[in-house]
Image 1 (spheres, one colour):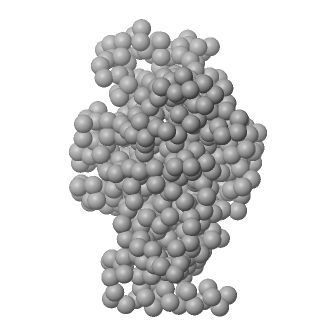
Image 2 (cartoon, rainbow, N blue to C red):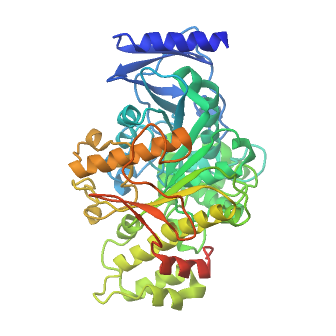
Image 3 (tube, rainbow, N blue to C red):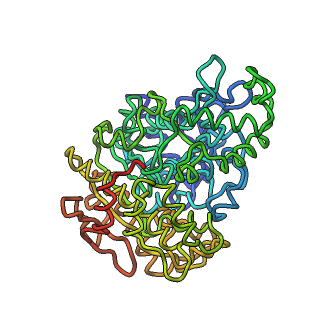
Length: 530
């Protein structure tokens, strides 16, 4: 207790001076961060040994102590290896630099603080793209407005994080990216008190693949004591994780792309001999090689597989079987989640035969019913219809189904839909998202980070961003978005049998009921496992 007290006193004294830097003790040694506008930033703090050379395709290992030296945590580190991010995502979500040495985290904290709630964010990106170093995830404004400690981190992606070649000695066992996430959460438990955070008040939040990762931690026994609340943003619950058979087949594709097939049983030595760029390119190319006939495979071809340990169950199986730890939950989706994926996949109008083929590949046993619920467009282009179907099936209704199962087991749930399009031209070459609420759009408002990407919010958008930050951080304080240090303008009701939820929009958000009830009743009736 004396050691902790001394560290906290030292921390407060240092951060209330006019110095440009602040130094904090951790279990590995002291770290130096920067002070700006009453926010301390510690960027690029290692939470694991670099997963390079002999540690490529190995379980993450805690970082090596650097004491008595002071670690210079004043600059963001490269993201994990990835090719094609700028081709399939707006520039402000992609890292400018990448490296296999990428297991670092970033901490932002108010300058004077003790025992604050901690919010740990898991970025999305289909488990193959994005980085905590991307401009959209910068935490200065979130922390200054929310008065919490924020942690973001990188985890291994794609072939580096999820390659599964089998169970023989020396094989890549896969799910390294999930293990990285868990180690980062363990680092927070061991160290966040030195930054003024309370390790018993950790809220885990994430978007897309980051949101999908959260149920994995809710079902895994080794993650049990690492957080108390969760916020799940735009998780595509209907996209299944790989089976072992599918993961092995995908590995054979990667082995072939890297010309390691001729190595026979020595394929791992061949893979280890490849450069980072060669592996990242094979990772990119393998995305066009589905591991099954399921069309949803194309949305997330490289990611976790169900191994019975790190990923004990498929998410839907865990939901129906009550295998998820019950914690206070905020959960929601956007109104046009699937649009960017549909328009990226089909750069020209989607014809009727193509539309029918997609529906058949999605859910062949219910083709007629889907055509009745989502009839083809009269203008000959079915991309908007497919956007509605994909948004409902993969995101909105699967999330409603999950929320209802949480409710059934006595869990407190606050559910939302985000329904506001950028007022500024933020999508760049992805022009089909301009004026639409595409997947990921709420992130700029949650982090108040548009200005760091070269854009300006309107007055209504400033209010919307402040609103999101208030709800998100109140929840971290009290497990209730309505209660905490921040005033809210409209009470967010808990989710109930009337499907009551909050719709975030401009000029004013509103409480709504029975959002897309008929569509979601349809999907509930036929199920979410095609």
